[in-house]
Each structure stands twice: as structure tokens, then as C-alpha cells.
Length: 465
Image (cartoon, rainbow, N blue to C red; front, side, top):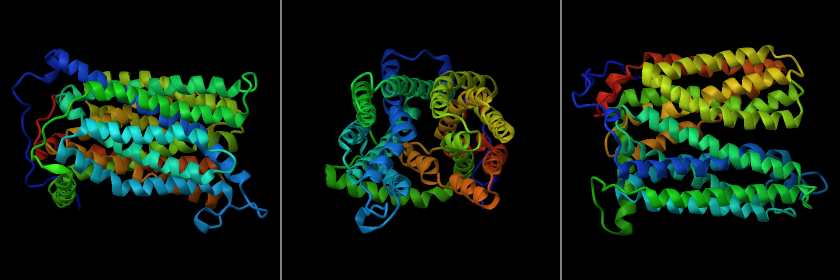
């Protein structure tokens, strides 16, 4: 059990030193923060244009075109229906991340070569994403291979990117800096998605086929990701690791040893694990709501595809303002209270969705606005809160476990949604069942003594938590 009264955890007064937020950031730090923000701008297009909108239906259509007379495909000699293919591919990429992300974090912390790792991982991911342009004429296995590598690279690069946050902001600034980064990411994702939607809806007037338009949209996400990552790599800088290792062989071996030590060391920080448990629950709820909203809108509310896609774009735009707004609220009342308030709003959204009548496009858009407002802030403030709970010098390793909580357990919500639908035959009951994740995660977070957790991790608590 996680002990809230761990004997090594004692309350401490906030440091008498002036808070970091009271000191103006010097020119070098502002420059580096710009580079950090630009990576969120760079990478978010992979989630929006590739994962959320275009790849799943397109790769399914490519697989359907390659099906045999019985309407089945045979990747790796396994017979499956084309409609299941992308789900299996996505699950494989997520399962592999459970193995890759913690090792990536250990390598980043142990070597101190974060810039090089970010450049290599983002470069590989963006190259594979751009390569999706060549997925056509039944080449569904090429598309699957490129996506698995791209998604692995995306997750690993995100671990490295997150780990810069404690270097770029003191305890009292972290909520604001994290919120700005997340807001910039939503804006970048929305801009490219809007451009891609214009291209997709006008492909006939541009002399393109629908498939060619989708392939251009997918490739544009890879080019965007690569181009703006170059800006990030140019502006960010490495920090010297606590233990210096010589040579690549020593670095890799040392990283494996460091990962093993961190896994053994986790039991010393039960309150950090407590937070990860709470985050696992409510973030799984967040991700599931985003993932099944289009299905709920199409199947239960009978809304048009254009309504669903435009609602996705609306969420991205509103999330930009929501992340900034919730960052300001956190500065006044604390990040924990702000996240808890956001979880109450999420619960209200699901309750309202349960009662939406069929064809209620206006009400669906209204819920999209509310979701967008709390989405960015929930994620940004969770990231900044977790950064306070990491033992110094192990930022990337711990963010590896954080990303596993974000990505590696994202099957729980969809599983509950699917089981509830199977048992009841109602999408309304299925969407309502997701309230469990927000209530359970919120209760765990509410019971966590964050100030004690920050001190237990060896850090100075911010003035407001």
C-alpha cells in the first residue's frame, strides 16, 4: 500500500529564498525556453493530423484494398479482418513503448546528451512519418512498420523533451512554463490540421485523388515535425550528468544499470508513485474521452463526419487558450486545486454527453469547447506537478515512467467503454461509465499530501501547490 505518512516524509517550510518567478529570466534562459516551446509546436502535429484524424481510416482502406477473396489480410501470416489492423498496430507500438521509454530516460540522464537524443529520435520519427506518403497500392505492412517506428520515436523523444522542464523553470514558475508549452503545442497542431483539412476537402479541385491528398497530409506532419525540431535542437542545451561515463558502450551499459537502480529505488518514493497512480486513472479517462468522442458522435448522436472533424479542430484551438487560462488559475490557487476542479468539469461533460439527443450538433460543439478548455490545463499542470516529485538528476528516467502512465495503460478506458457497450448495447451507458476514471483519480489526488511528496523527493516546494 502507498503510505501517505511515510516516515521519511516531513513537512517543510517553503525556502526563504525569493521564488524563481520573482526573478527575471536571463536572455539565455528565455532563448532556451523558446526552443523548448518550439518542440511542443513541432511534435503535436503527429498526434493531431496523423494519429487522430488521417492515418487510421486511410491505413484501413489500404488494407481493405489488399484483402483476399474472403475479405481478410495476412500480416506476418496471421489472418485478420482489415478493420482490426490499425488497432493491433497501435497496440503493438504502445506495448513496445513500455520497454523503450524507461531505457530512453535512463540513457538521457546517464549521458547528459539530451540534445543529441532529441535530434535523433525526432529525426527518425519524422522521417518515418514523411515516409507514409509512399503507403499506397496495398502496402499496408509498410504503413504499419513506419507508424510503429514513428510512434516509438515520438514517445521516446517526448520523454527527453519533458525532462528539460526542471532545468528551465524553478518550482514557482513550472506551472506557467508547462502551460505555455502545452498551449503552443495545441496551436501548432491546430494550424497544420486546419491546412490539411482544407487540402483534403478540396482535393478534387486541386487535381488530386482522395488517397493522394491524405498521403500529402501525412507527409506534411513529418516535414513540420522535422523542421521545427531543428529550431529546438539549436536553442536547447545539455546539462552535465551527475556521473560521467566514457564511450558509447559504457553509456549504454551504464544506462541499463541506472534503470535497474531506479526501479529498485522507486519504493523509496511512495508518494511519487501515489501521484502516478492518480494520473494513470484520470489521464486514461481524458485519453479515452478524446478517443471515443467521434465514435459516440457518429453512432449515438448520428452527427455528420464534417461535424466530428470540425469539433476536433475546435478542441485544438480552445485548448490553446484553456492551457494558458488554467496556468493563470494555478498561479492563484495552486496546481492541485486547479486539476481537481478540471476533473469535476470532465465529470460534468460526461454526464451532459449522456443526455445529448441525437442530431444535437450545437450541443456537441458546446461540449467540445468545454473539453478544449480543460484539456490542455489538465495535461500541462499534471506534467508540472510530477516534475516537482522527481528526485534531482533522474528527470528523464522518471518521465519515462510518466509517459508509460500516459501511453502504456491507455487500454483501460477503451476496455471499460467496450465492455459496457457489449453488456448494455448502449453508447450512452458506455460514455457514462468513464466517469469512474475521473472520480477515482480525483479522489487519489485529493488525498495526496503534495507538499510532503515534494520534500520526500528532495525538492523545495513551490509557494502554492
